[in-house]
Image (cartoon, rainbow, N blue to C red; front, side, top):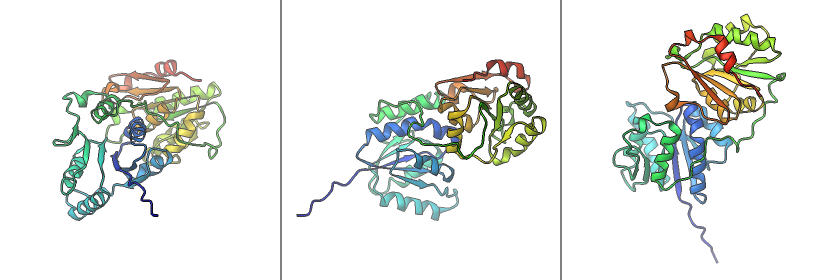
Length: 313
């Protein structure tokens, strides 16, 4: 006698980036997984976040968004075929961008799935006119509530195993994140201030550890030039590496940039530095031990103020 196994419903979650947004979506990831325990859940994301997404227990499959351009109809057709062939029952659009609106349009041809998002015409539409003024975490929780997901936990890496054994670091150490968007330099505390803070940490027998993107290597070199005792891990850490480093760090100081979201969510005492260029009420780091210091112009934020605000464990 042949017993036919029930076909699992297929769920698609869309979250393309950036790093801080991916981190703050981990609560929704967990909530969606709990709500659809017996479903097959796929994440559509960009290449740089695949390893991180696979390291958790949120998804059965992770797809890479190949990011077809607006003038690449074949790329969009290829994506549309892949989506249609998987016969998704529901889509959770946690990106809510113009790009995901196109995906919604592509899925309207044929059997249309339920859709949680903000695009006009979707089945579970988040229509709060103030949604863009809400913090990301509260906005996504409100969106999911419309789809009957009411218990959205805080962002968490509890399900991720990460080890810092690849980095030979003496303890205690403090993570420094001096970089940020290359197009918004007014979000960066001056590099000389980071160097001076590093020197003060060394004088307290604390190792300053600089992390960041490849494009921020010059910042690390500058800090190392003034503080040779500092450790430069710029362009040497994945998201999972940062989690591991954060779990063992005494504290962290950094600008409003992706790695600070990772560090804060890891539970590390974290001091995030903000200028007028971004609003922590909308995009601020969340965690069990997060402080935020904000100055209209970061040129006016002294090393004394930052050092006094830095909490260590």
